[in-house]
Length: 373
Image (cartoon, rainbow, N blue to C red; front, side, top):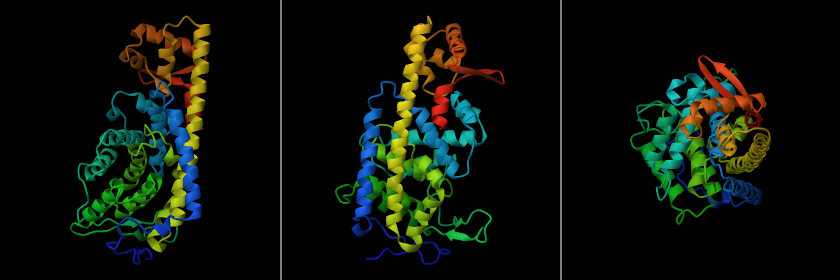
């Protein structure tokens, strides 16, 4: 059967087809070829990441960049300096503006990862939790009285016009979410490669648009959490939103292509390519970070009398900005020793010392460069 499209963008799309989609939409030579390339790239990334002794090197730095890129898709921008400084603070609530929103995204990414650990299945509570952390609202699935519509942005002739009206009505959204959740969890009934399920599930979530805000960011968090849930990644470190941000028009064109024309092929190819490209990108960044870390450790060991150099170098590679208190709280050094050693790394041009307000921050120049590329 052909896919039932949205014929009137001004009316709620209550006829949004349930999952699964017909196999003819993904049993395609181009899609299956791209699927193989994407799985190979993701597998290489997974193999590289599990061999790293200091997982904090990835857990903080890479996931922070994913949060920044995903937020930028929603026009939430901040500089790397502002973001890394905010991340170095002990409490996200000590920050404000865009950096705070991005840190909430990162927090949700990890909340979702922890939520789905073990035998826990994806459920409505998972999606609601992600939405609440991202948006900082306390409500859940939008009610039938919430007149949610998506309008054209920009300044063109269609700016402000209705682009899409998601499903609406008593129990309608809840029923469609139940179908999506069953599709994602039941691998016996819906036997499909996890990467294809992720791409299909992401579209379906965005089409349902279950929350009054934050659906895009929640859907992109789901992408990463689903891959870790299915064992394709140990940690949510894939830089997936970087590709979406750099190919933003194609992302929205792919979504609307299904809604308006039932064009699943373009969307599936787009999402699979995103996995391949960003797996390779993340793999390269990991290698660059490890090479930089090893070079700095060698220099510190050869040219200084710093005690426990491995612990110090590992600490400065867990996030771009380090503070004295980070080393003290980690039990690596006493305060005066930590300050002395960080200042010694400044003299070696490994770190750059910045004084912002009354606080001293130490920027890892190589890590900053690699992450910003």
